[in-house]
Amino acid sequence: MSTPTAEPPPETGTNRHARGQGTPPWWRRPWMIPLAAIILAFLLFAVPPYLTFDPAQSRMELREGSALHMPALSVHVIFGSIALVTCCLQIWPWLRRSYPAVHRTSGRIYVASVVPTTLFGFIITYLSVHGMSMKAATFTMEALWLVFTLVGFRMARARRFGEHRKWMIRSFALVLAIVTERAWLGVFMLIATPRLDTEYGGDHDLMMRVAGGTSFWVAWVVNLLIAEWWLQYRARPGSGKAVT
Image (cartoon, rainbow, N blue to C red):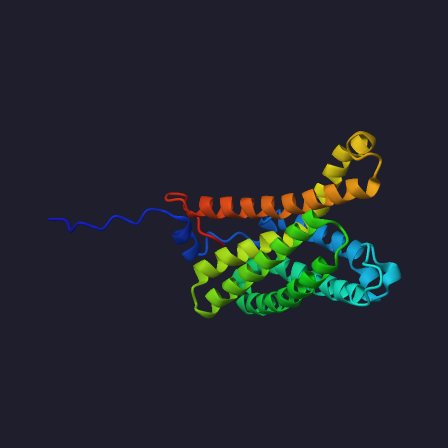
């Protein structure tokens, strides 16, 4: 009489990962290279004028008579740049799995950079001369970015790593809006410029304020919606995928 044998468990992404078969090498993540290149190009363009703390170098219009605006903006840009670089490291699955100590260290640096970036962001939002829509968009994004980051850090401290990753993905979606906003601004400028005389009465500053405020709202809202869609997709029963 033969002894019955247990059926092998169904093949899942988790099982493959446990056997070392579910983790592609770093070069199998094709989105990492263009993402890193875009962030590098953005930083090389955006950061240098603010390293000198010289108001004459600012690419953003400063509030006249404010001695605080340029220093606050420079600190915001410098720490925001650190957040962008460490964000790129944090969302690289190969680095997290192969070098967890590097992942933890860069994560702490990310959190430590987000706090001053957002706090000084509140200051420059208050001092901004770019209209109420832009102020509302940036203040809301900065507040959510800070909250998501701190909640994600708290989840990691509590060793609730699944929740930690979800909150940090939301945080990363918002920091990347700093980059995608420039692309959206280009789109809205292409739409608005032919209407400068008809809709904006020839007022270029008004057109820029409308386009700038709209692009900032769209940038972070779209990024956050994509992040939420991705989290829901990965969590679907039967998807065979986990949030990584």
